[in-house]
Amino acid sequence: GFDTLMVVGAGIGVTPFASILKSVQLRAKQRETIMNTARPSAWKSAMGTDDSRAGLERLVEDLVVVPKKIYFYWICRGQEEFDWFCDLLSDAAVGPAAGIVDITLFLTGEIELSQVKKLPCATGQFFGRPNWGRIFKQN
Image (cartoon, rainbow, N blue to C red; front, side):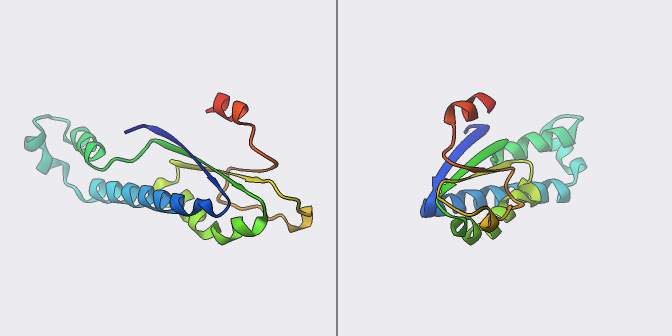
């Protein structure tokens, strides 16, 4: 298991990554639900520690694995492709996984500026191909 993931999709090849993003969202929600419903006092004797909440958090982190950060880069030719998956990307960027998934979009085809829509789920939206050297230095 890695703490940080970098995921790159291009065009309609984003489909397999949809399940990855959905899985992260579900795991983060599962972890949140366990922590909100568990009674720390019940875990005190099982964990063998006075700090039962911290012990429970460590146990849940070990059992329900969620990366600390996912950088998702999606490269598409046209705005329409972004529009098709906008709801999915928006779902991945909010909720329990809100601080985990960072979405960056690259539009490589010719398009009129009037046709470009800002997608609220993306932390970055650029024209042209990614500059991987700069991206690797940043992250």
